[in-house]
Image 1: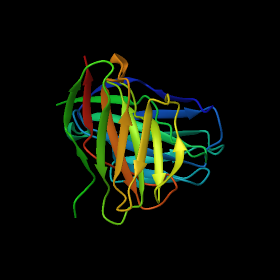
Image 2: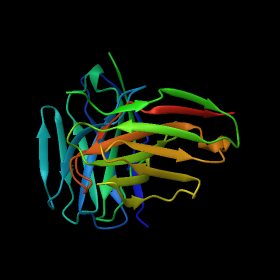
Image 3: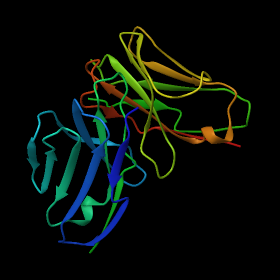
Image 4: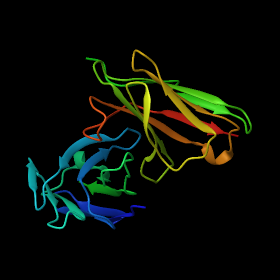
Length: 110
Length: 113
């Protein structure tokens, strides 16, 4: 079955520093989604990437989908305390299931 | 517009009991998926229902079952509860059967003693 690795598991940054989380799949993906979960909250959809090599931006967030459609990254420029939370990738191989990575917990100190 | 709603918010059960969790999707959404999230882990896919039919099943034992009603709301049932079933159970709805953007509810926190 599909295996998903998300790194790092945890990162603590100072406000204003950049942050990147990576998601790697053992299989070629149809698409990949990213979600953010605040402490005590539920996952909230951020974006879906579909095309090989796709890059999408949302304000300070940049999402990339690898050329081979097996990996993806989320980069946050100049983190803010509001960015605190756990970021999950959810790769979709086209099967009738959806796998979430274990997530990267981001802590931002003011 | 109301988001995805789930009930109850919290639940405490003992081993061997059964539990029913409920979910109401966003109006107009026909697909409902269920996830189990253990503390410190990502959500684990349990079921997806679309138009009252099961469209996907994760790697969970037969103690877990679900159904979707004509109004697209859904129930997740878990029989013979084990301590390891303690988790946050999340429901997510989406407009279509494919796994596009999913809208998650606040979840039901189940504790099995």
